[in-house]
Image (cartoon, rainbow, N blue to C red; front, side):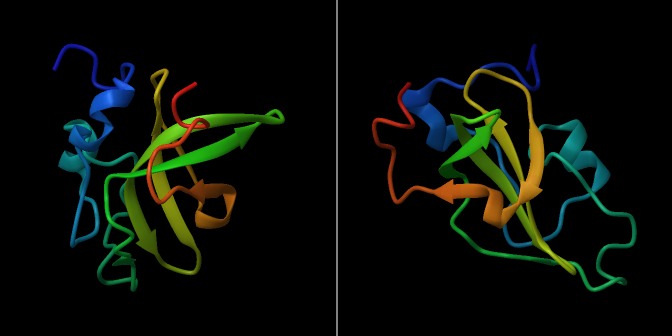
Length: 110
């Protein structure tokens, strides 16, 4: 993979690497399947949350709705997700900061 956090083709968003069924480890971040990891996560009570990954969503930044693909979903004190904007890059936020989409719509295909 030449550009680990490069743009995502909106027509192939479901092929975005993600982490399922377990909490992320350092290697998952290095491989682009996760955005963050927590050392000793299982010992501190972090658990994966199944929201059907990868999951299309929107994230609002500076008043603008940005299409993203959620690639990671974990719960500790707060339900946190790791996402990749279609334009490239990555981010971390709480589940309340994204709008999960049942399927891609006009907001996702901008």
